[in-house]
Image (cartoon, rainbow, N blue to C red; front, side, top):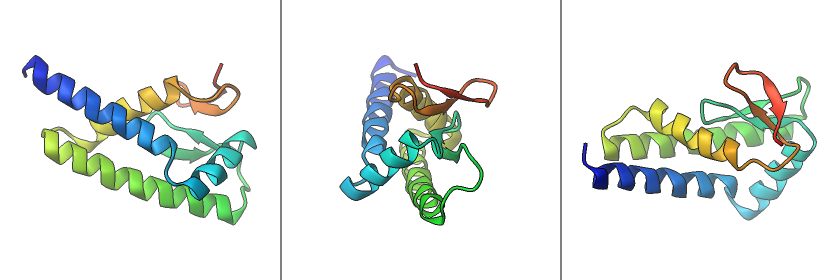
Length: 117
């Protein structure tokens, strides 16, 4: 695999990670509120997860909608680059978790929910 190909994939994943932090103005505000309330966190598999059981239905619906969009985008990028979608998702997760707002929940390598520093 050429350096150019690797850089292209890295840039694509970086742009994807940034865009997933802001899925839409209204959705972003709702997602940020859900994260701040501790209902939702970023998982190591590239998707959002429910941190606390019993979250309001609106939060669950928001998570499902965003995860659906993420899955479609991961598959699109994976197909374009000839790699598994799970690899794209994990690379994106690493970037999103690494830039998570302090105090929001993220999964660690063991799959445990921890607060971002």
